[in-house]
Image (cartoon, helix red, strand yellow):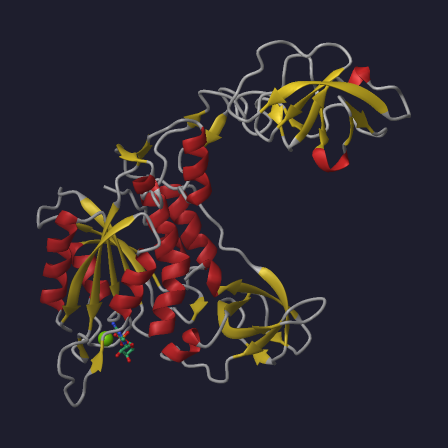
Length: 424
Ligand code: AMP
Ligand code: MG
């Protein structure tokens, strides 16, 4: 069971700052254990379970970085061109049979091991061949165009730390170290519910007062980029008992549950009460806009008070609010439970081309389009502000992040923006 503390009730009825919620996750939620070995390619997107120590140095041996001529730098006459006798040829994949004779050079190709004694390579473009000699111009530094063993990764160094999410570069590095499999954490089993009597699934006929459920698909698509095995658990009706029962049941087969909608204060909002009934609420309401009515807690796997519990996050129903709270609450929790190292979403500065007033004490995310500009890109606000506007996400490039203590943004101000390319 993930031990989520409820100390944060110290915040009383106040809104929990986003950073406090993230600190709670980092400090109180233990990663789930377990590991399995998977083939290298299947490890992409997974979380490395143990440090990977380099069983060999990279590169494994001293080698030429260019096609050219290998020689001993000490054989060069200082400050002038030096003729060296061409003494052989060393293609990639072939080891030198004998040390380099004094005053000689060897034709060498990129990736070929340096012959014993040689320490420097002249690029073939800079060489002048005269009969059996190569004229080496002055000015080459010792060690030029040669790659020492271990300059990339030293033998026995931690090449990849436990908790690293494995992307293409990590897969390539593991292959270079000779690995065929990697020990990874099990995929986190995440169940995703929508809630609301007004919702129906795409593919079904749309009743007169109904809208299609979009959050479930947005959330499943967001989860697809994380080390998760997600389950689509459908739409819950706006009924307290059904909500509580569904959470309890789903807790049995999952490591984390996500819901959206039904978490505000209306009589038709049953998620918070269902969490309280089936487990324990850790916090409710974040100091963020859009996204305020977000809840986090645990629900037990069954009615027994002593039963194990799994974390649950109740995301708000409005589609933009669901996305914002997913990114700042659900995503860190997923990474934490999955054993991944904490990640900060990248922000970069942009010049605001809009005026905006906000309440102090909460963080706000404004959807912006980014236009080229110097010295900073220009952030243009999306024309409308509703938390339900799906097109505000498809037609913007980034969230401008307005910190808790700010009161307003004026045109020309520098704002930090969180590019969608980094999160979607
Ligand atoms: P709620 O918090 O349940 O009152 O929902 C707030 C708004 O978000 C309402 O307009 C809901 O119809 C809408 N909403 C809730 N869940 C979804 C969903 N899964 N897909 C699309 N819209 C939703
Ligand atoms: Mg609802």
